[in-house]
Length: 484
Image (tube, rainbow, N blue to C red; front, side):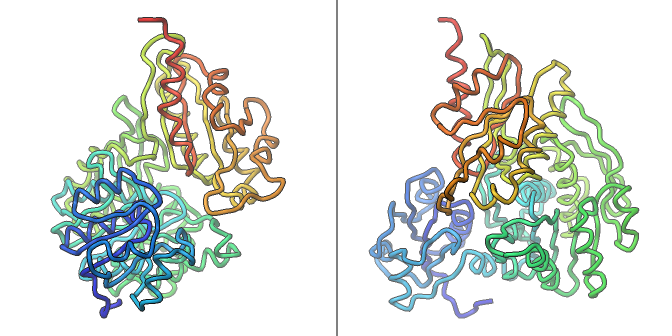
């Protein structure tokens, strides 16, 4: 820990981001003076201003003195903030300590029972489920999540309870800055190879994370994921306390790992997916409002984490049943009531890796099949990052082929510069049948219109600005309604 750092006046560069706005909320709740800047105004920025933060739009060295004094520390996310940022340069020139967001989060978690959720996929959903369950069990945990809980509309909270629940991001190895008491690993699959270079280096960061668990703590691994289970086996050999969760079939493959949560059966009902499981051999039944087998496993991991943190199983399971999701995770965006496309529904999801895309597609297909109305699944997908698209083009093609039709937009480069000759066609050219390549974002709704019909389930999917299309699809397709 960085005990010498004074957190009384904190300036956050990129304060409107999902991770940065969360730690800013906690700082404000603890009485710190918070300032910051971002490239644009936004709902998170306005919310922070209402809590007392002073936030400038645009980056300028003068922003460091928004409070009338220089900050005692400046916080950045090195993955998002360039080194020539004027505020970062000014802080360094004036010898103001500069922390990464993960360093700050580690400081904020000091003194709490730390419950950290890691893994390639499912971190935000599992963390959110754990928080909702623990809140219902009366634990009032502090938390920092990479997305907004639908019910509370917030991504962070300074609680009165003993536990602090947070995501542990592996993308830049920042999870190694934490010392968890309970560490959940949902799954492990090579990703972020632009940072790690090799799959082996990516796997190693999870072993290093497991070795940082505090004495008396536990590593919780999903046994249905081959690499998470292997992490558990390796960690057992190094003396780490390991607990597994998953289906009976997966548990049978890893008899050395003590089974903390076993999924016995699932039933799809009008209310969602009813899950029968045991936690520490005690029977539990809960209902998940978000579809998909991946959510069943995430829910099991969340319940087990809450139980290990001291939660009451009845309260935890009730809280999970009440959980209605997190923003951009199979989030319902609206529907069309009448006209040519009556009954068409739009959902939005952040999935941007082939495994995530596959899981969400399977959940959507499962949902329409359970409804039994003959609806189809149509996806509007925006690839994220040139490097990821090149690495996984064939896998994306296979995942998107699960849809009845896929409209594939151009690559959202984010922090990367375009790569000559690389477009989303490297995905669509590997697909056959129901696929449309649409490089013009503004034409997406028109292209979609040619491939949907009444009752269909439409998914907008990706980590870029494809999320903006949800309302446009609903309003654009509703234009076919007759005059009222």
